[in-house]
Structures are given as C-alpha cells and as structure tokens.
Length: 284
Image (cartoon, rainbow, N blue to C red):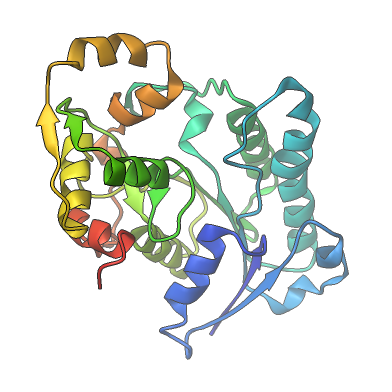
C-alpha cells in the first residue's frame, strides 16, 4: 500500500491523479491538503510514503508586481513542504514543474537545451527545482516532472480556449505545426509509475505523437459533429502575427520535446490521440 499526500487542494492534476489511482484501492491511499493556509504545517507527514506537490500559481496574466507572490507559492512553498517531508521521514517528493523552465516559445527542446526561463511562472518553478535537487538523496528522492501542455476534460488553459473558438467558427486556417502535449490520464499513469519505481530525477513525459493543430481541430469538430472548412489563404499573415503574438504562437507555432527525452521503461501513453480528444470533448 502506497500512502500519497497531494499538496494542493482542487488542482486539476491532483484531482485527476486521485481519480486515476482510485481504480486500485488495494494499492493506493490518497489524501489531499490545502496549501493556501497553514493546515499542512500541522500534519504528521510520517504517515505518508510520497508527497505529490501540485500547488502553484498558473494560468494567470503576469504582472511585475506579482513576482513576490510567484516566488512565495511556486518557489518557497515547495521547499518548505519538502523539508518538512524529509524531516518526517517521507521517502519521495514528486514535484510538478513545467516546460516553461526552458523559456522557449518555439523550437525543439533536447537534452542540451539550456534552462533560461523568461516568465515569472517559469522562473519560479526553475528556482524550486534547483533547491529541491539540493536536498534530494538516496533516502529522500525527488522526482521532477516537466510536462508540456496538459489537456483533458475540464482542463484549464489554451486547449479549452481553442475548443470554444472552433465551435463558433465556420472555417479555420490550414496551417500545420507540431506541439508536444500530454493527455491528463497519460500523465496520471506516468506519475503513478514514477511513484511505483521510486524515481529520483527529472522527466519530460509527452504523448507518443506530436500534435498538429489542424489535426486537433479536425478531431474536435468530428467529436462535436460539426463541419469546418480549412483554408490556407491567411497562412502568411498568421505566421507574421505569430512572431509577435503569444496566443497565435501557442496555437500555430512549433514547440516540442525531442522524443527520446520522453521515453520511459514502461508505457504510460495508454490513450491514443483520437481517444484522448474524444474523452476531452465529452465523448465516452
């Protein structure tokens, strides 16, 4: 029996993971604690084998005056919780980080790509990563996960914005690209395997195949029984705008992990791209 404490109440990844492992009640016992208040400070962590830390400020429009808040929640809080976990005898700390630690808006990330975070979110996560690695050892293992865009039913962020947009549009640009993404249940299975194998390093999980926005939109419309027409007449204009506009870059730009970075000794991609979109769009 693995006893897992999720630090970060009501987070999308945390609640999804709890639901995922509930299919094995004989193997996993999961509890959740809120980190907004000091409730976690009064808990005895010694009961747990693993801490899964998912609490973070994310999906917010960044402003310079928010730097202190990002540092407090995304950088300092994970270290405080990890130090308590280590002192209480917890054996593993799993930290949800982000692709943003690389600071890239486009391109291919490989094992040699430097960590040059640009956003407050990316910088604060990178700082937490570095400090967590300092306290990791054979008795207190720290697994850091840097997922690309996570999507799934009721997820927040760019997938839902695109889904809503597609349902309203009669046509969509036929501009092909490649993005690394990961379906929420594939990510949950990956986290489960990381816990089972007591990992102590940095990981970059993603779906087996890169996502093409045209293919994504086409699959979305099929799931919703909607017709949409693809046109290429605006492609050159979109490419120019994408160089200056963050939202356009995220929809039509290329940003991927080199595939060999995401290979794991066990298969975690249990859902194909088509199956994942069907589930995300509400189809059983």
